[in-house]
Length: 197
Image (cartoon, rainbow, N blue to C red; front, top):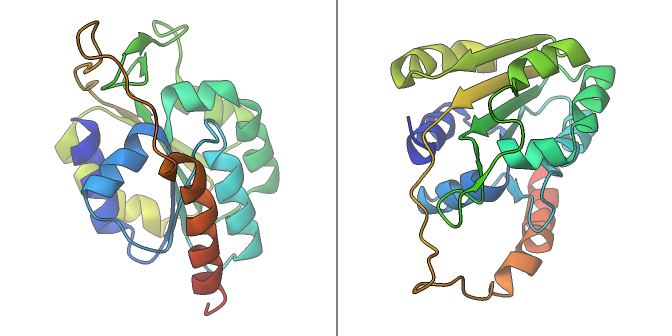
């Protein structure tokens, strides 16, 4: 299973749940044409669970789907305890575990990759449910039931990293201004959407 396929499965199942995505999943949802209600956690690497938690607590009648990255979550592991402490029943936390930072770009190795288990961490922190999937069909068969259940739920997805694109002959280009303004732009659109709920 790759990140685009995993995000496509999530996107089809989420209905009108608020989508909070970061890093590679944010790019995948862009390719898939994901629309509001959504919020991209950029350039706030590691902040997706906290943003999602705030929305989940403010709007308990709305489901919130957070699609995180493994390297992003490692930056703010304390967020797992914060989410678990609040026990938002409408919170679904997907983690794309591909073992790399900046996958598809420079593919830096993930610290502790041989031992890290995000599903186990979430369970130990106090999430209501914690699941792990590596097979596409098994995940696809389970997702509707997951989103129909009571959270907070951690769903760790073991996925293949995309091949790196940055090389000495193809160096990284500067980020566009969109990477620094999109979260604010999307937050304003999401706020208007949430006011109708």
